[in-house]
Length: 178
Image 1 (cartoon, rainbow, N blue to C red):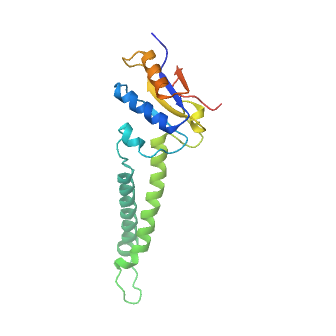
Image 2: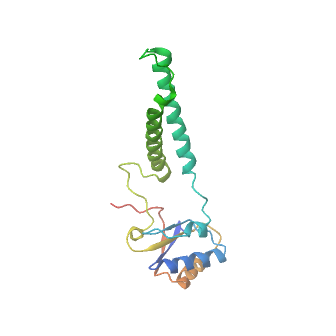
Image 3: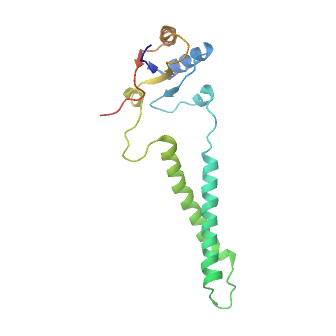
């Protein structure tokens, strides 16, 4: 059995890489991931990637922040230590709006940063995980899981037909920068 975990097709041009994706999909070869040094418009739809759920997470964090702020203000200013300031009511909602808004934004910002770190595995101090170091500089990489049913030679030929400059057989999942 081969120790190859991934077959990498390296391309110089994004259009050739998109052609490679199309040819692989025509031959029913599942693509593990695509790495690019720049954003490519429409590649998510081509790969069948679902729409992000980060908006839902932001909404939940915002609701949590607003609820916490409003609850704290109510507890501190109305229930625990009410003050009679010029005969105004203790529970004046317009007074609560600025602080509640700021806490909503604060919870959303911090929650989204933590969610981003969790989703991308890019915690501070951790080495980035990339398939090929040139994918961050000047190459477009298609990674294919080699443990499928299709022979490796067929995948290599399809990638070369599509315009791959180089086809690599990786025995490790990621390459480190060290």
